[in-house]
Length: 155
Image (cartoon, rainbow, N blue to C red):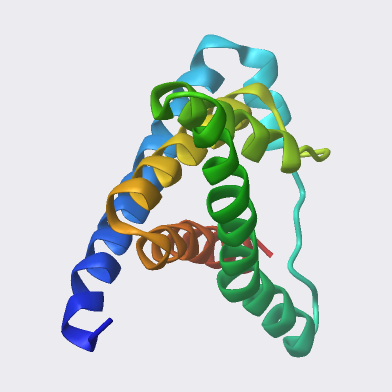
């Protein structure tokens, strides 16, 4: 694939990633407004990327580079492709989003965040199908970059 053919996928990945960040934010804020206990749980989250420069650098590198590449290869390259062999894409994409969310289960998974993760997984599946792996990795990396910046400035 030539460099000029890669740029549209990267540009679309950036745009879709920023759209995912915005949409996820709306889902999380709306969920917090609907459910005061979820809002309190979200406000009580205390996530840190580390306290030393090298911890912050390693965590950021893992979030922005390694996680998007590895997760896209796993969830879109293997899982989604396998699901599409068994069922129509219209069913495989949301199921892929659910599996993506299940893999992100942690102490910080409050229900509005879970809904946002399902939607992001679904969008990444659609993007992978339409524009390929590079676009979905770029979108995932964009989402994680915004999250990493937010975590750094929260600390």
